[in-house]
Image (cartoon, rainbow, N blue to C red):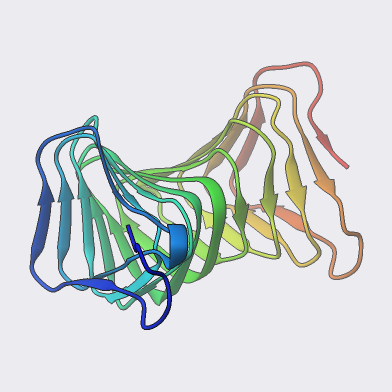
Length: 231
């Protein structure tokens, strides 16, 4: 916790390995200016949740979360430059912060789950490897490419594709009643199998051009619910 506020902001710079092995919640609070966390090495969360809320930047960092554990970006602005690794059986979650990818490759491994639950994901990144990309809330304005080994799942409440482009070559699902709000210029490009499991709608809430578009060059399957609408 930054007890004084002011500038320059306090900062934790990691070029080695930062390991959380106990407890339920460790927080770098974003309150009162926060403490930034710059990860240029490895963060390994083995127990509970590590919450980063003070912003930060890093290059070629790795974020490891063991099964049942997680890392949350909760507030402020984070910039992931170079190539980023997301590993372990837990979850790396954008949950209130703005996380910007700097154009490099993001590698999912160890059945890792990358989740957008709140806040914003911006920039661009090509994901590789195998894992899960869950979108349960928040906003995506980024250009993201997901390979055949990454499952792309939409669930939870309303979410916004804010001019972003998501290209998915793997299995995708859309479940629950949470709507997908889309902004002009937004694109979902499916070259895998995208399955709709419930009742929901995609809604262009801004109007304008270019018109949002869902491009299907794979398989689009509706297997549940009574009414799914692209309005």
